[in-house]
Length: 221
Image (tube, rainbow, N blue to C red; front, side, top):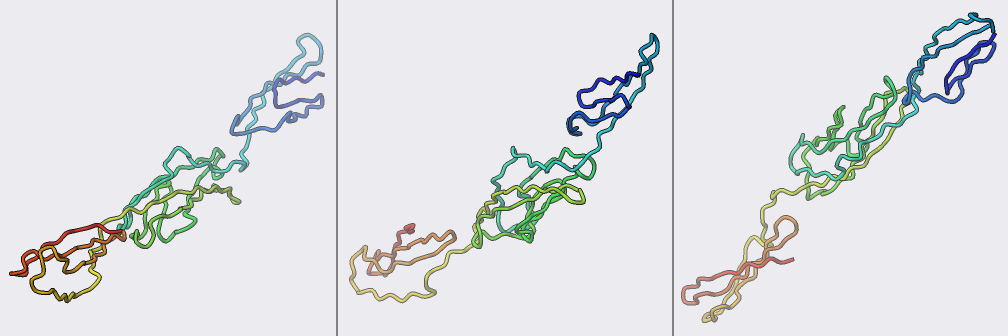
């Protein structure tokens, strides 16, 4: 009796054993339909049967992040629950093995991520405390022993003008000689504002007879 099957991945022996000819990949082909023919060598002495083979899944793929999405993100300070950015990861495995979950690895108290990969702030951020975060996002599948992949995002905290200018002193007392000529420097005031910029106000005598003045504004490093 002769047994015959045509398939590049499987071999059928005379005793009826159907064996793999090479490893199968479910992500490439998830099922096969085989027609097996048996013949005794006599005319008309043949019979056929159909064998349907379903390739079951094993967890052999890591989640993969979409690298086309932006990695450099910005968020405004002083606001909570603000959208920061989006990540997406996929896993070609089947069932729970292909179900992707996300997690913030570092700074979980500052940022949160939803089940669809949307990242937002948990609390208001302060640029004067920290202006940039390297945020590590993990994608894992739903297997009992899950496979994991990480992705790093750069988050820049943008500034809002939340700092009032401050003089270096609360009170100034200046002695000015009488009959000082116009343009005499009476006092140089230093004012600090946010982003470490100082505004220098130079006060000059304008009219000595009535003690009026003018000032010139400078931006100082």
